[in-house]
Length: 328
Image (cartoon, rainbow, N blue to C red; front, top):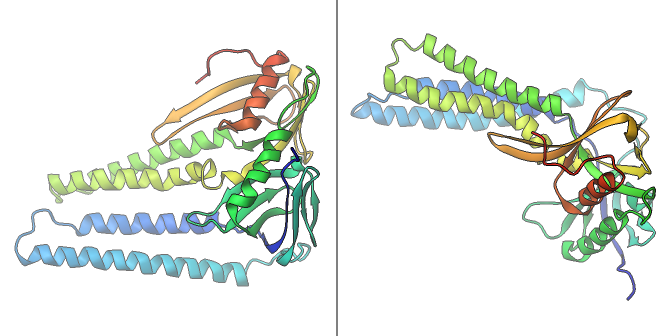
């Protein structure tokens, strides 16, 4: 049976990197401000026409919130356009109809070049669309293809799974992909969310002497969770929505693990390796923590699949990772 292949002329767009975090933080701060305003507008003791007045006030605040998000977005775009100078050395993103070939040798885009399978990091679908597919690569970053997803995805997945299988020997070369993240940063964001929620609750209690019990309780039940989730959105999105952009490729050669882009490498015999599970309010995942004696630490998100299974099996077979229960 011949290996699967794909060859067709289609629309390819090189998606450039966007500075999105400042915009998200501005929108989050604005949402928190409007949430505080909404809590103080509500009057649980209102009667008669005051109830209708309160509803109108809530609708006005909601309309202002939607309008404010548009204004904040437009202001940030203006700042990026007029104050932030683009990198003149960065080439113009590729866009156009071109020939795309997918096969045993790799992933090729005419006009951009050829990518070996180890440098094809992951694929990402677009919600509610079966005609667009984003392919993450190391040399060309994100490529959005206008193509029937059910025709191309099985071909790419076949080779991504095939190339993650290690050679039979204990010192054979293993190619694997995993999402890289900062565990300490994740913990810091979670703690910051709890701290902001606690601060919002204390501030509400200190300034709620004339608000009444019910209004104070509504404020606590709304303002505190909202404050925490506005902060937690940042770490949660890093390991979910924006996870494909953080996927990196690695090679395990015997006991030496290194990233294909050359940014990280270590001899695992001189490192402490643990397979850990993280869980809390709104999240649960497992990751591989690598702590070398020299150099920076590495945390690899493990979500199952051929790449992660092959990496864990290879580490266990080579005596680098004991077969024990997950650490917390």
